[in-house]
Figure 1: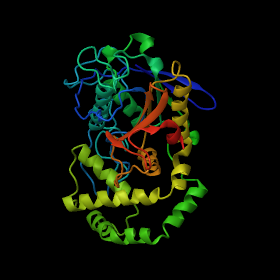
Figure 2: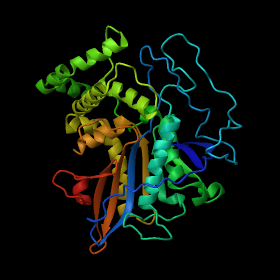
Figure 3: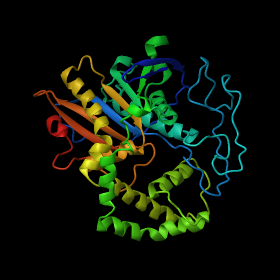
Figure 4: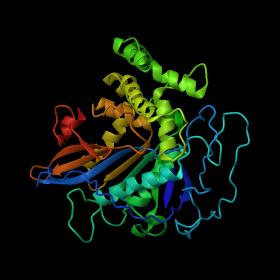
Length: 401
């Protein structure tokens, strides 16, 4: 059960109760490395920043006619008895589905709308929650991992959940938590309610503002660099392939936008346009990664894009360090690619590619009980990442710099 709470200068609480479908545990053996954890280190706090799972395209590609089916099934359910996940059913609170009839290309064929988290996306983010459950929750039986520090049964006061006020990110948070703490591992009734905090869009800081003049000027300067002009020239033939494939005279969509669209199609098992060969797919992946590098080319651009949100994350970690008995032990922030990208480029842990849907950045806070110092370990998409001039475990004081 989740309670959606709006946060901002004026607190508005929406008593919207979401009862989630029963979870199926999905094992995942890709555990974070344990061999390098010092004997005196104990995990105390985890902060996760996630990108939403597979969605429908934000815009319908020219000439695309295949239908997207969202199965008349939403995460935000309002009934108490949950039918089996394997059964086909129509929820009692949803007897109607909108189907578009427009002859224009502004709508998405089928029963989904643009930018909607799909059934495959929900499954994808449920897998993320299942992985967290295996990594971070103490089991009654079996060998205990050093990463397992949360209780078997949910204690809501240990959690802080934040999302952008977008349906796909709100649903992503629910899907993660539904597998992280299934309904049989939660208190009944109001005691099992979790709050998801959002902000009004004009106050949102989980992505950069396009209206920021300083960012705009810095990005203009980047586009004057010789390396950027070479990048643009190197991939002009790829852009031409898309112009011919789409049968359009001009193509203003970025490579990141194109990559996101076709990652959606592949992740949702949809048919790709005939002109998208494996070679074009690989070239598009590379071009989107290069686009990301130039979009967040300097520390200043990264800081202006996402610095206010990073401060919120750091403040919550600092709150735990200062008051471990009252602060949240697990923080989840559900955002977008433009939440993840400036952070990984600012930290210099990007792998050269655009962060795929379902990506996660994890900040683990470890205490050295021999001297009560704190250290941070970072995982990006379940791989340990070392900060420049820092080892696997970076002192918290160094990390804050």
